[in-house]
Length: 294
Length: 186
Image 1 (cartoon, rainbow over the protein chains, first blue to last red):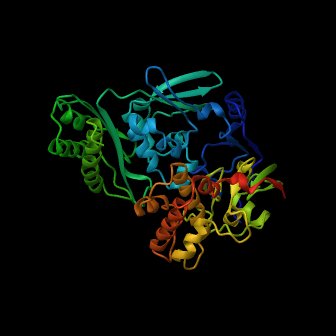
Image 2: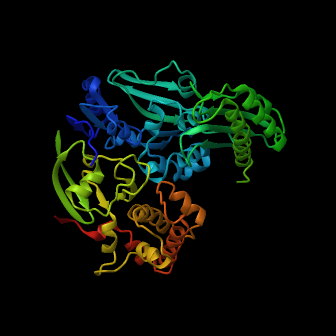
Image 3: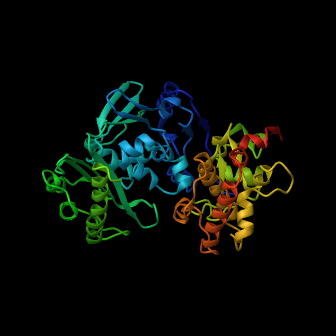
């Protein structure tokens, strides 16, 4: 038997209002459980010794999944990874999100882990931050004082910017529809299969009927202190007739413009090599999806 | 410090008062005596041996608190033989492991079987299409086996899938219908 530190109170609120009250009243010794896949290990090794646990899994509002009249996809923070990649609308309309969700941990983690946990948990080395940035997502944050929205690009691209103030929760994310003839994809390399990304790249391309690229968004994750938009690489693609050579050129540009760190998992030069290799794959996949061949 | 829970495990409803900090795996093993669910990696969530099915989804029971399972329907490896409706009837998953010799030391087997339960239940819901070896391996990423090299486990899943495909849809679905296990108060 493993002994976590003793916990005084466990709450499983079934409404967002009750949830916010619990969080606001909980003080410093409160831990929020979403899917628990990152938090449970910290409870086991007693890095966290909470007095109060608030479990979000019964809050129906946080499990919403809607597509608005303008085509915007709204996903509650407690949607689980498996629910994302098994969702046909997400597979076709926001493919990068489905790719990423299917590449987080293993099946058991995907069954428990949530969008909110992946986005909020305090490490940049997760998969969904770069995907939500690439797809131009917005985050809806709720607190007792009201609701605010923040753009993922501004938030996750700036390491000095905290997502949540005390007493706040991530309610949901909103992803706008991609333009016609667009495709998106996500690929990553982890030390173990589906491990945290050493490098993870999200890409979205829009290709005109004449084969010319009219829009490109590339965000590279696995970088410290924050995921990085590869703007020069995107400019290499825009205005060009896309083929394998242009894609290889863009992947090289991305590898050159990022500033990767060296750490225990990979050197900076290896990370650049990964960006070249994975960049070609992910751009190729987004391109094929945009022109409808897969 | 303690909470009352009601958890349905293999069709038996267990009402218990347990510490909040108790993991689901310890609840199953120590409170209910269901030691078929194994601990292989000192509770780090890395090995998958403690996988059980919670409300239809394969879940590492060391990565969930027992209080979180309140109101849930849990199936452990001990529950597999109850789906057949007659004593000793092996579940197609068990039959597959038997036929293809999908184990050596057997320590990882309960977790493997419960992950496979989820994979095959999904496959059956989708009309039981062919499962590729690659798809099976991808689904078993979270279950570590140090004996078999996985090849016989993959074959065991394919054998189970083939048995299921040979059945009429109702019979196929019954092997994954946890409601069939009943709700008898323990």
